Image 1 (spheres, rainbow, N blue to C red):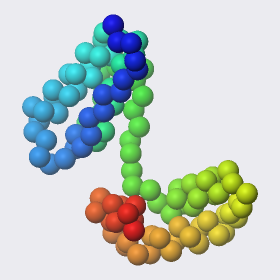
Image 2 (image 1 turned 90 degrees about the vertical axis):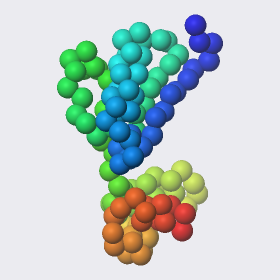
Image 3 (image 1 turned 45 degrees about the horizontal axis):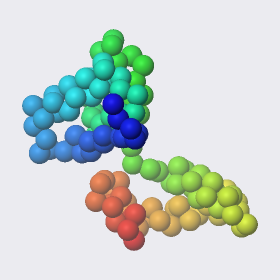
Image 4 (image 1 turned 135 degrees about the vertical axis):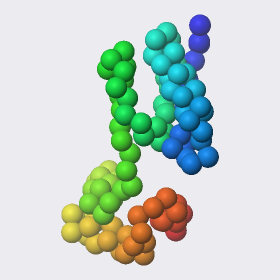
Length: 118
């Protein structure tokens, strides 16, 4: 029995170098954890883009990730600034997000990495 809580996170399941057999293995691992339901272990498959239609997994949380867009980033700026002493108006947050995104007209993984570290 696990004493501490653990997350097993397997990322980049959608990477081109991940073989179908590897993808099937991580899915089988997630199914096994769901079947056993250990109290302190959760599994997250990041980049698992194949639809999950298994009736036994009806209650799992599935969230399809996407690259952020200007409105989402502006909302995030407003939320973060709202927690401090100087909140941002929607217009200012939108302008800031626009300035960030205009540097990266392509919305791909490389651009998002550059946006994050820029």
